[in-house]
Amino acid sequence: MTRVRAFVQARVCLRGKQVEQSLYVDTDTGLLVEESKGPVSERVDLKGCFLAPALLELQINGAIGFHFTKFVDVRSYQENLYRISKHLLKSGVGAFYVTLPTVSSHVLEKLVTLAPELEGSVELISTLTNDHDIQVSLGHSAADFDTGIAAMRAGARSLTHVFNAMSPLHHRNPGLGGLIASPDAPYFSLIADGVHLHPTIVTMAFRSNPTRCILITDALEMAGMPDGVYPGHAQIPHPQRKQGNKVVIDNTDTLVGSCVSMEDCVRNLKQWAGCSVPEAVRCATENIVNLMNLKDRGILEIGRRADFAVLDETGKVMQTWIKGEKVYER
Image (cartoon, rainbow, N blue to C red):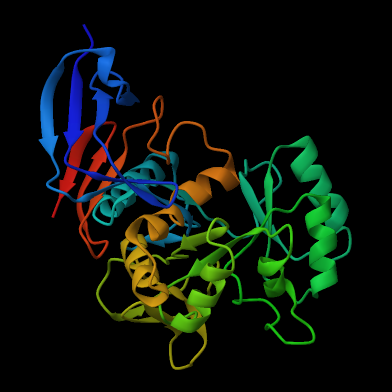
C-alpha cells in the first residue's frame, strides 16, 4: 500500500505565484502524488511558510575548500562532491551542476559557455545543440549585439553571468547584455551578490524578463570557508583573498569570483527588486528547469521529485527536504 506524507498549511511556490494548497509525497518513491494515491500516514504542518522546490545551482566552481578542477582519483572526488552536496543543503539547494573551465572533448557536458565572436562559433553552436543536445550559453565575450543575435539563431539559448565578463551595456551598442530585452530573449544568469552587480542592475535585468532570469552563485572553493588568503589552482594560479562574499587575487583589486549562497541570492533579489518570494524562487528553480529541459525535479507538480526548501517571509531557508525526507533544519 502506498504511504503518503502530506505537507499542509503551506504557501506553495509555483510558476512565480503563491498557491495555498497541500502537497502529497509517496514515501516509497519520493515523488509528488495525488492526494487519492493512499492514506496519509503523516502530516507535516508548515505553519504558513513558503514551500518551494529545492533550489538549483546552475553554476558553481566548488565550496568548503574543494575546487572542481582538482582531480586526484575517483573516490576522493566523489567524497568531495558528497561533502559539497551536504553543505549546500543548508542553503536549500537540492542539486547542482559542476562547473569546469575548458576541458577535453571527451568530457560530457550539459551546458557550454562560449564567445560567439570567435571563428567557427556559429557552426559549433549549431553542432552542439542539434547533434549533441547540449545547451549553449554566450559569455566571456566582447561580442556585439548583432553577433549575439546570430548566435541565438544558431541555437544558443542563454547568457552567462550577464554584464560580467562581457562588453558593457551602452546606449548605442548594447552588446550581449542588450539581448535580455530582445523579442526572443535568451535566459540570462545573474550573480546577485552585491559585488559582481549593483542591486539596481540586478533589478533592471530581472524586471526586463522575470521568466528568463536565472540566479547563480558562480561560487568558488572558498564558499563556506573563513575569510583569508587561499592558494591558487589550475584555473586561477595566484593566491586568492576571500573577504565576505568577495574573492580577489591577493594584493590586487582583480575580482575572481563569489562566495555567495543561493539562499542569499534569492533573498537579495526579493529585497532589491521588491518581488515576492515565489517570483525570486522561480529564478533559482523553474527557469533553470526550463532552460535545461529537466523533467524530474524543480517544479512542484505531480510525478516530480519531492525536493523542497521551506522558506520564511524573507526567503530564509528553514528546512530542506530531499525525496520527501527532511535532511536539514535551521
